[in-house]
Amino acid sequence: MKNIFDMADQNSDNLKTRHKLLKEKHENQNNLDIFKNFIDFMRNKPTISINIRQGVLISFLIEGVYKNRYEVTKERIEELKGKRKIGISYETAMDLQLKNHKKERKIFNSTFECAEKFKYGALNIGGFGPEKFGEYCVIIKRKQSKEYSSLAFIKEDSLKYVEENSVNVERLSRDTANRECVPALVALKHENEIGGIPFDELASMICSNECYIEAITKGEIKNIHIESVRMRKSVLNRFENDLYKAIISELSDAEERYWLEDFINMRDLLHNQGIRVEVIDENGN
Image (cartoon, rainbow, N blue to C red; front, top):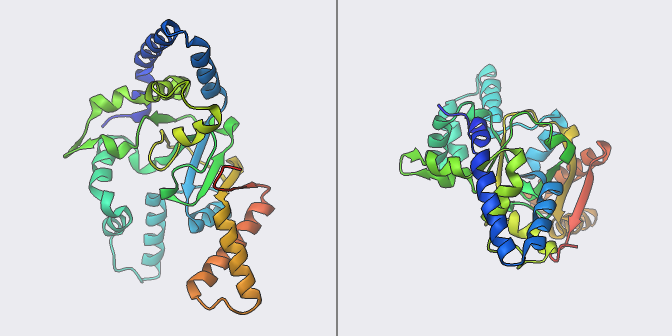
């Protein structure tokens, strides 16, 4: 089995060479200052974000440590076994968790060491991150992300490197970076956009549902590592609307009542742990 973190380290020389060629290209086009500003921005601004759903965020805050779906499922299976209420295997439970991506994820996991310990996030310089994974974007403190001993970045979603019944290791090995080479990886991925997009629009270009650089670590991510939690204004509007309905006894939908209770619980946990909440509208304000 291969080591994704060693692969990222071993690709450093390749990325540095390609970065040098890209820099020379921009110099020949009289765009060197723009290119340097982009690299400096990507060296000083990014951190890691994890998009998660409300229930997962609440568990993260209560337990004090972020657990991936494998760790959570194993714990739940063991708990149910202890209560003799289990009628499902771990493998079946994971198939249900992975849903449409179970084949690709199993192939990826079987290729890399300790894959079931991986925590997945994204490189983030602002914005909501890939919301398809969850409406709450948990921002990890930049200082803390620098201290993770095992950290690798991939140009695309890791599942995009699964072709037929195997991982295209050759392509993946060229598209993987360690912490030092992240600016080069981002520049190479977005070389055609450098200089053509205002800096205040880079956040959505680099990290969105459609396009993001995946971050992988097998290190422990604790709640004390959280810098802030971002959410859309529409989520807060939903809370305020449901709260008003609850006050006047018009919140009849059980699912909405549960959501409201969880939101209040989450809000209180964030406040009590001193974690900043960033509410951003559709215009990024």
